[in-house]
Amino acid sequence: MGFLHSSRACGRVPTSLRAASEVRFIGHSGETGATLLHFEVPTFGSVASELFEQRLLWDDGPKPEETAFELFGAALHDVAVRRIESNRFDPGMLRRIRTYQRVLGRGIDRITMPDTVVERRGQIDTSVVIAASELYAVTPTPRRVRVTGRLDVMGASQGVLKLDVRPGEIVTALWEGEEPVETLREFFNRDVVVEGIGVFRPSGSLLRVDADAMGPASSQDEFFRRVPSGVSQRDYHKLARLKAGEKSAYAQLRGWLPSDEPDEDFDAAVVALR
Amino acid sequence: MPAPYLLDTTVLLHWTRNSPQAQAVDANFQLSSSAMRPLVCEVSLGEMLAFSLSRNWGAQKLRRLGELERHVVVVHISDPGVRQAYAELSSLAQSSGWSLFHGKNDLWVGAAAHAADAHLLTMDTDFLPLRGRVGWLITVLDDKTGLPRS
Image (tube, rainbow over the protein chains, first blue to last red):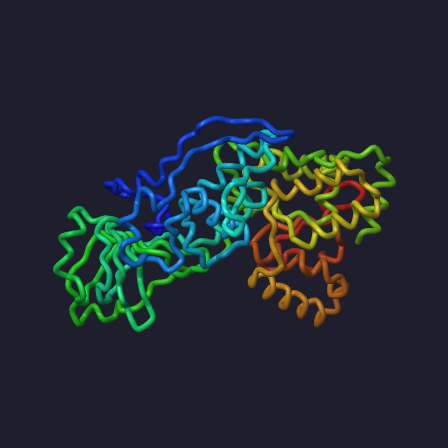
């Protein structure tokens, strides 16, 4: 996610990126009330130094001394504070964070990463899962988009493209076309029109385009010289819907707060509340 | 797919206690077999907490109250749609001389249900004038029996 703006790698993943995400479980130890799982994970700089030789494609991208855990922690932190303009998560990652609900329902209170740097430390707990669900529900559905702009940056190893749409307006695209990204070389620094699936942030702003077509821009493509946006709306019906196989929330909540007090006393207290 | 229910504070209190009223509500609305999660206005969570303090709930019950949020969808009053619905409902209630206008928490709960396009289940008779109004889906329940008021 940190390198591609996408939590789902498409096509051949560069060896360096694969190495950077290689997390090895090396053992566990116990503490009172907590279990420590030990992992070995390389820093990005040690296995993917070429990614840092050029200026990073993202201003808030990973740093050479960081690891996949720091990146994940920072994404979790953004989710927890409901940062709707974040570049650190996408709808796919939000969906996966939601699945931790199952683990948390089985006696685990939270999962933390104590060895990561404090300012980028995230954790998985119920509030993060709820935040992920809410952010996912308000994130506009990806849709097909067309954008015209000057092909300003090409990151060959990552398949990342940057389009200069207008002064100060930049669109990031991941090349997912059938031909290798190298075949787009002829378009470099020229006005092009790009087509693909627009993926949006919870705010409705464009996170990236999963591009599958590119060609020289004509005067008719000027209409598309703007950054597409999604329609952000909180869909409560979607939020309320149970997933297949999920237990009835009503059934679980019925009697959730039992009480020994007589019905008459309870009824009177409820009436007094109004 | 039918609209999800938004439970007013009193209904949520009865439901989580599994009181006789909750059983009547379930018999009428088949909530236990619903494929939807309940919606709850953020204000109701505050009212539930206030109720817990006034009833001197113990630590374990307070912890469970805190965990309740995991099973419901909270409709936050910071949602622009809710704020707009609040303004419209407040204005309507005031100009119509309804007692609902004076219950500010009730206005937020009503606004949350409206903005979420949900079916409001309440025991508050202040909501009676809204029943059957276009754009509103409200059932006012009897607080003694849990049955819908006629």
